[in-house]
Structures are given as C-alpha cells and as structure tokens.
Length: 168
Image 1 (cartoon, rainbow, N blue to C red):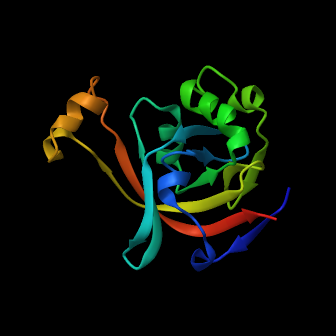
Image 2 (image 1 turned 30 degrees about the vertical axis):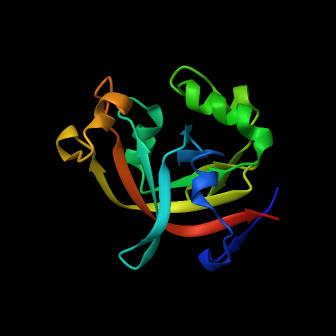
C-alpha cells in the first residue's frame, strides 16, 4: 500500500461521521512496540495557529501509556469493511491480546510512530497540550453519572497535525 501526503485544505473530512460514527484508531509507539485503540470521541480544528486534533483516553487504556511516553501518535480512519477490526481494537487490551494478529491489520510505520496500511486516512500528530478532565471542571454535571460510573475520567490530548496521508 502506498500513501501520499496532502494539505489540510484538501481534506474532505467530516469529523462527526469519521470520528463519531465510523470511529478511528489512536496508535502510538514505534517499530519495537506500539499499541492501538478505537476511539469515537475527538475533534479537529485550529488552535494556536495550528491545525489540530483532540482525542480522549481513559486512564486504564494501555494505549495511553504509549501516547504519554511518545511525542507523536497517529489517528487513522477506515472504510466500513474494517468495522469488525476496529471493534476488536476497542474491546480488548493490547496488554492481553495481539491486536495485529486478531484483526489482520498491517502495521505501517511513519515519522517515528505507527499506523496501519488498511487506513484510508492517517493524521500524524505531535502532542502540544494535555489535561485531565476531573469532575470538578464539569459544567454539565449529568455527564458524570452517564459516562463515568467508575470515575475513570479521560485525559484530553491536543495535537498538531504534522502530516496528512491518504491512500493512493
């Protein structure tokens, strides 16, 4: 598989469907060791004069260890034929499972981080900000009971999009 780089202005990307409905993989690490997880919460926009994405990771997720330990990570997006693979990546832990073997996805290494060849769109991202999301900061307090019965509040990551790759 080959990818080509495009500019952000060339994207035809609807974050509400690509992130919220189609899901994405957050992947971090390198050729020696990496992990991936499925996410359906995130955003894209402009902050500090940079094209950025946001993603949210719960503290118990194994991928969080890789995102925290590295400056870069990828967000990657897939066609509907990969929904089963993304479901696996979101429902089992890389601590206990070999997600690459179980999903059949092919690792793709770029810019010191990891993604997968089956993606049709990859954002190579560099962390620029992160923050915990404690209950005390919730304005809409009803979200605590709905989304956090175990009080496992997300960490928010904001990352500059360094490169956008699309499948040739």
